[in-house]
Picture (tube, rainbow, N blue to C red):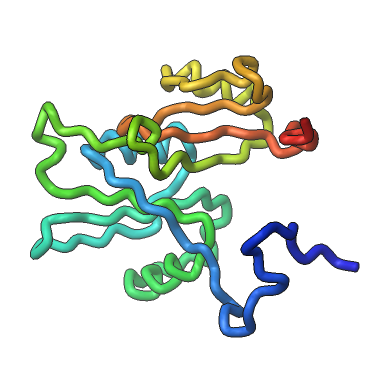
Length: 179
């Protein structure tokens, strides 16, 4: 029998037919300075900017990023690329409200301080030790290194805006949460 879902109170036994084709496309983080955030996510995390959308009347810009190794399917035409971007999975949207980069005191809530809300995003890496070495080389700020705390083989780093990023190597997590 094929896996369907883990069952807990509130979990539907099967997805409704009306949700067929629904895909989690992106999550959004607000950033103070797009140049700083884009440097981190492109140079350190290896993501590519798929599309930038500007909204001058509302004074903000959206940057859509993803980890894309094969770019041959990405349309050159900006409209087609916009549609393509909104059909993908695993997109990170960085939202920049114009002017925040010029305000020395401006800071977004990272959601891990009180009151807590959104917690973190997560990147799965092929080699956790190599990723940690890369982050060290790039002076990335850690919340938790993989050898620290009770949850081993899981790291948490911070992006330039203070958002937490969980870093995992999938095959090291087989016993995670097993007691």
